[in-house]
Amino acid sequence: MAKMADCDRHGVQGIGLVCTHVAHAIDSDAPVGFFWGDDTDTARPDAWCAECDRKLRALNGASCEQWFVEAEFKILCAACWDEARWVLYERHRH
View 1 (cartoon, helix red, strand yellow):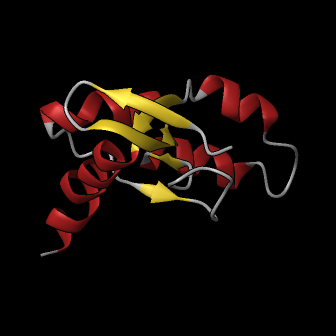
View 2 (cartoon, rainbow, N blue to C red):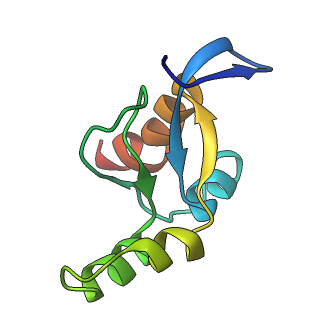
């Protein structure tokens, strides 16, 4: 069964996970960056900020379990995830 969230703004949606920095930057528009991984079993792939991306790359292929814990991933509905991508990635490219 698909993982779902009941969002106050968008209703029942599939989910995506984002690091805490992305989650907090959505409303403030802080320029934290927006990176995402491969598709997962959720509606949107996991996403993270530039700081978390640097830490992930520094692992150089080693286990990322601790990185995932330290990034404090939050659940967003798919529509909120799409908004985060727009605010933190797409809009800054145009």
